Length: 399
Image 1 (tube, rainbow, N blue to C red):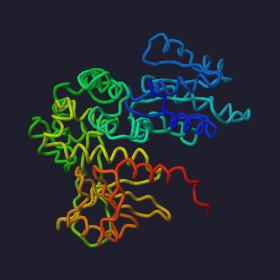
Image 2 (image 1 turned 90 degrees about the vertical axis):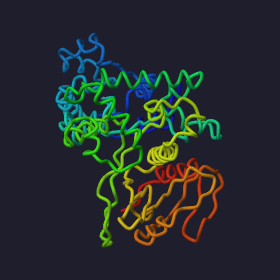
Image 3 (image 1 turned 180 degrees about the vertical axis):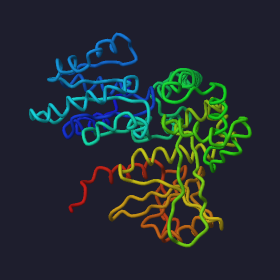
Image 4 (image 1 turned 120 degrees about the vertical axis):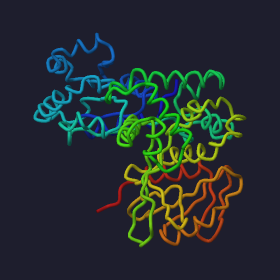
């Protein structure tokens, strides 16, 4: 079992500021483990809303929750009872009038903030959200073997900690089937399991490419709007990342379609039947897999306000990841190479002329940090993730 120490600190800090905190992340990423670790530190009551017995306790929700108003109430899988948000709002407002303004409720959800907000708009101004993703390179041992295991197996704790690669692969295949057969129907319209699985696999084969809903629709015998809806659902369930193109007023013909990535590299490999590093090294997806792995690790470490995109023009200028960090940190341009040679393509330098970023990096498979040119630095994924995390921990600038 892994206790996410940084996540625990984030939770406690958020509960000291706000009456309700939402801990959001995919199923099996460790949300419940983190919540139960927090419950050991303070008087708490925990309810798993996937259990009928716990849902029954909330038949008279207001009475039950008032009875525990001196405790932290943890509501796991809150999407199973979205009607609770209205009750929580009333109890939070009552508590504020009594001077009890913080640390009342912790709600856990397996979908994006945007999807939960459709049910939780009534908590606007009363809740702070925290994203908990899979394990990152900053949360494991800092050596090549551990990093390769994280890349191959992904960051879901059970998969990463499995006894061997074969067991890890079986766990991830089971995870995929659980989502398809049980979890997806809870959030969206009834989608044929085989259709969604084929779409998921097709997105895996097209890791890191521009989304072409019409081409996918032809293969699935569905309409392009239908496919776009299915992709959006996978995005909302935090299983797929839709990386938008960077927009600027620089007079260039820009790519307008988003790029898509299976967010967890272990799920990507399970969808493609890749079971070990030998198979991964020889698979056509290896470069795109590494690119997605790096992007997820960097974004997990980046400051909350960072805006991520990619840059590509019709003329061939391209940057894999553009981070707008705001303030004095400005724009960072990041090229990603699965190679021991940190040599960017000519299109990257053309993009730097367009973007004029404050910093530019090539993330490569090595570990040394050194200048590639007078404006570009070579760096490993762990070092750049650590740099971004250090920015996240800086106090906000004074106004």
